[in-house]
Length: 148
Image (cartoon, rainbow, N blue to C red; front, side, top):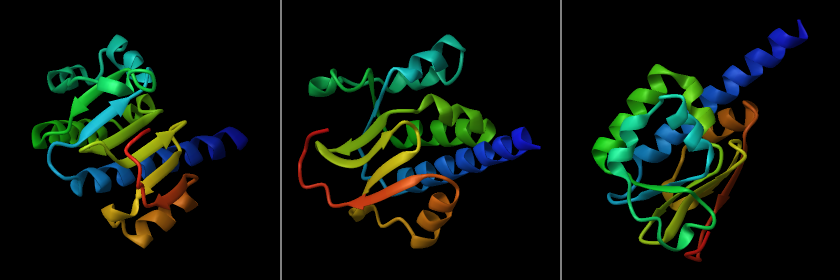
């Protein structure tokens, strides 16, 4: 019974992570960038989301914090949406990541469940409450600095 409960909690958390990320991606300004940590290598090694490599961009000054940078074009966002909706376990490859636009932080995620979201994205309170009830830790912030 305990393992069933843990499994259900993980499924709820995965759903919350996906809903939140999809909501955020729907509000992003064009030419935003997704910086992802090394867990994404596991996805590539497992043969998952390989086509995201088409959207690789220069990682620039963030090479010490992240391993990859992807340009979040409308095509890239659509690709990620389709993949995450089809297989919700893919969200687990996104453990440490950030989304920036013009070097302004819009989202930082730690350990896959701690989300710092810029208030300018105006994520609905209902979704934020649902995600917190699903086990995510969420901070709404006004990022005034352009560093990660």
